[in-house]
Image 1 (spheres, rainbow, N blue to C red):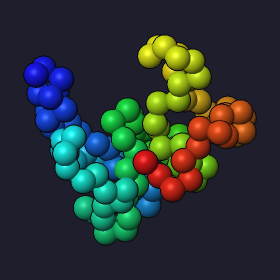
Image 2: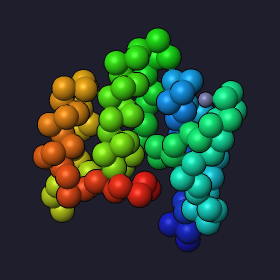
Image 3: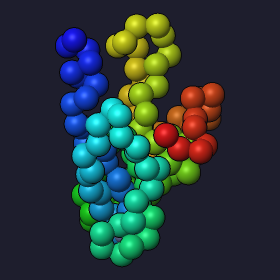
Image 4: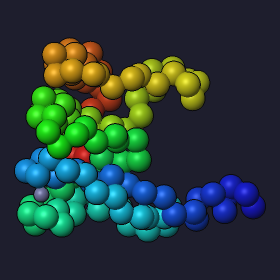
Length: 116
Ligand SMILES: [Zn+2]
């Protein structure tokens, strides 16, 4: 009962527009369709679904946005990456673009090229 309730509870998905360097959220629930892309409310270009765990950098932080785009281009949409069987064995996402370059190689098998 509680489990069913939890699944039906709406939650927010982040979408990011790399043109505008902004992110916006859409409320969805477990039973709803979650689009991989939505038009950016500002420029109308495709904004990418980055799931529930994405924390957008500041608009002025071009380096961080470059890192995010790099990760997405390599199939990392801020999905949780679990390297062990436990729920806490998740891999932290890289802080910098330099780290991201190693990250995408190291965790290549967890990449989802087609998105979430
Ligand atoms: Zn935009």
